[in-house]
Length: 509
Image 1 (cartoon, rainbow, N blue to C red):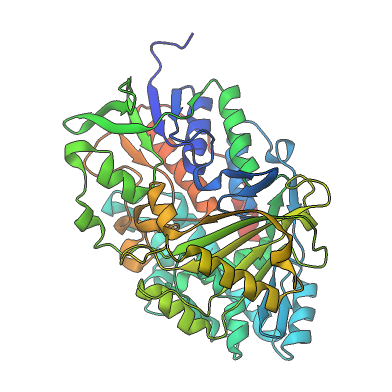
Image 2: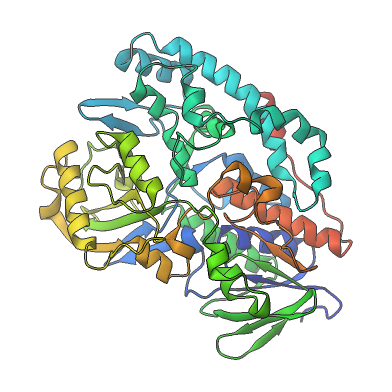
């Protein structure tokens, strides 16, 4: 039986941020209930099951693994005891027409590969790794604290980082300091797509994204990245947390500036001393707060990320010579990105990401078969493109391009299962404007200017996920969950002992 004197924390949404906060708060002695509208955990980090095949709905690899390690360590656990991680080397094949580059987190291998494909470029790479390491070491501590008070700007770590933040340079501009070949610049700037942004407009501070990959590597989890969410839910249960699936929230209940809990769609009311919201930010702010909702038209004035066009296909064959991760760049990548940023034009010359995880993971498809995860960055739904009547045609165009530009020349003949998720489908699943990477990471939507971890207007409401600080991407979402959990503890004067594994990595940056 739960202790009636313990504070009850309600978490709305069992995505990575909600699960992180739930784990930490349950470990720290709170009574925690997580309600999730879907019939499975994970949110955009959940599993897609299709005729015997298993796919990740969203993220397909983990970087900055030490962030996740810290969350498990704070509950007295080791993530490696719960999950089977595979350090991918090579990480990704990048292709421009007939030219391909394999990326490695092994410095000697990466420098050799650069010299093979782009002779004379390894010196710029070494300089990039040194200088961006210094930058990463300066910026990273700024991502570990909340910014709901302006006094946060007086924190010494942020003052030190401000020269990297307050610049009008873009990620692409920064890479011009190291490389001349446009293709090579793209090899270090395409990561801006993780934020749903153009490398020509993404703030320069995010040049550290590619550094973290080349320095610390990227990881696959056997069974799929969704296994992380399943594992976190298991730990949450072990810690005494209550997880309720298929329990959508109709509205949050409030008395003045205090949330008293939530009403579910079935009419049930759940009372709580504090509420953590892990729903999509735009959807939650415009739908869940009753008389305190943000009007749709006001929310739409904000800058949102791009969307993604997804194809999940099951095949009756395996392509063993195709890489685990493969990015096929558009012929005119800058024009492709400009189309996406316009929020109006669907590019025919698209860039395509393909994950062929069966070459690494035997758990995601029946024997002798394989599944491909295909992602194409595209426009969000702001201007109402008719995806329903165009998605099959667009999917076929994407598959045709994959056949033309990879070794999978007979791909379409081997498809035995297929599912498409268009931007309109993302929107119908409660993602505001179908913007899968949430609010854009512009200078005017970062730090204090991003929705706060302690939600404005309420004393006991907290946000986690890609729509709040520090931003989108699994490591930063885990960090948002920890920041909000810490704020809850501070509110109720509950002590906690942080775990710092990152400092060792920062010293080595």
